[in-house]
Amino acid sequence: MPFSKHIGDGIFELRMVGTQNVRILYGFHANCAWLLLALSKKSQKLSTRDIQTASERLKRLQTA
Image (tube, rainbow, N blue to C red; front, side, top):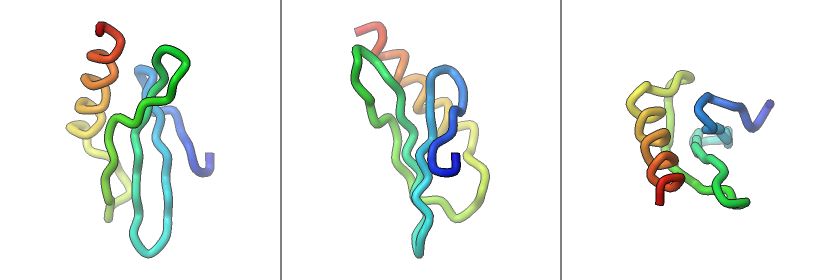
């Protein structure tokens, strides 16, 4: 915080606030940071669908 926050299941959120608010969900695998999902937000709260999408992508990386 204030720019990065742990969301859960190894997923982190990076916030960039300005005229357009951007959120990047990322995780770590094999000593690398992986960008899992990037979106433009108008509301404060992330949807559970976005968190599930990022979680599924991270799990696919870990099993590959």
